[in-house]
Length: 259
Image (cartoon, rainbow, N blue to C red; front, side):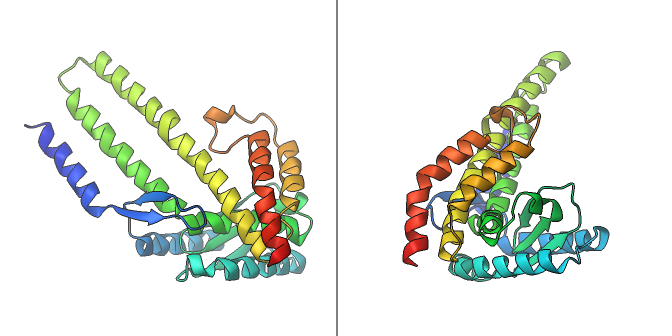
């Protein structure tokens, strides 16, 4: 009884708080255990701190390019997230070939990305991908997975407390490795692939040629060195990503040409 009570209570809390979210464009069902408004408020505060502590680019070319592309993609994505408060900021760091998005519509692009993205079409690949993460609610889903994993760890810890310490540590280590390699990393790779798909659609709807995605990701892959094996990575390998984008390309090109 002592073991079952707290575990049962935790599971009841999680189930009571859970909500089912339908991912736009793909129709996949996703579990959200946290209020979207709450996550957006937290993200906004964190983004504000980032802007205070990180140099913001004053390059007019980069700033206008990001805002121009961002606004067009946010416009076509608006039906999927009408309450988003979009903000696109270029951070001055040429060593970071990166961009990210936060719940609620905060999007950061680092100046290093312009080593790869030379045109609006190519930048639309990046921004479409990041906007898609927000539209799909990937941040909420990731937090929800972490909550469930924490609940599972609690259950395992309580269920093994009568074992000797070495056995208990072995079981807890096995659970941690299984949760990371079996759930968290694959879901993260799935999120990246899903964001590629949705982002490609957004870019095409916004009037950007989706075929630019293939050349962009090939150049991005060439920039990487010493990447971990795909099964240990939060992102799909370059070859996997490009193969899937090629499979999606006829649909995206049709949207682009018939908009």
